[in-house]
Image (cartoon, rainbow, N blue to C red; front, top):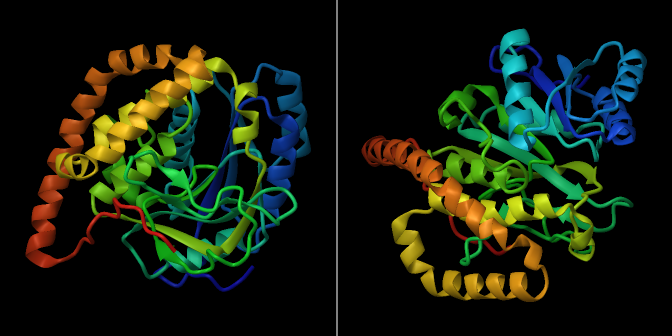
Length: 340
């Protein structure tokens, strides 16, 4: 184990939580890399929604130190919240939680690097590292930026890794595939007791959380020295292989996160880009993927809850901004695209 320490001088404590849906072979590989971390986790938890209880039992037998739980499929956010509740109940002294997709393989010093990066920067609520595609030559995500059309994008996605993103920096967001969370920030980030919004079900719930963190004055860190491989199921070339219900959720969630998080002044500043983007989205849906068009109706139905959450979030953000104006404790939110 390396020398990463918490504020009181003891080794930084963290728990790994894997949110899975019947990805049993991937869970096996992911667990191997979690167990090989130079900074060992206090515990490893797996939350699975698959129906093959036999495979899950076999994994539990092969990994006796890992806590497995089978649950109904209510989406990624529900899995994250379930894991965080288990950590709160079973490991209340852990300083951090690393939320993982099962298709992630961590470099041995991934956790130690993030723990060290966050150690003396208490405003960092969320962090991650450089995620690469299998083989390590192509980037998967070097953090997430927020373009003017307000659809968050993974930086460097599908680009060759040529050293363009080698600087640690505060960004709008990081990928939920391997998201390092400061536990002391989570109560502040929660809305209606949910850290991850369960209305999203699948996709963009991680960027929604990052957007919220920025609004509330927390920071999101990209640390390229922490490296992981992410196989990523959803890629541009394989879009039509994704279940249509999941594609509709992703389409819907774009609107939910804007309703919840976008500040009115930013919407006005970026309205021309937003308008063009929405016309393009509609055209794409009609011509290339008409099965996702019901996502508009789903967004409309979920909008009242999103507006209610918005009122709660923005009231807190305004209060926080007032405090910042008085004592300068909180940085301005990272709500605009930053080009490296």
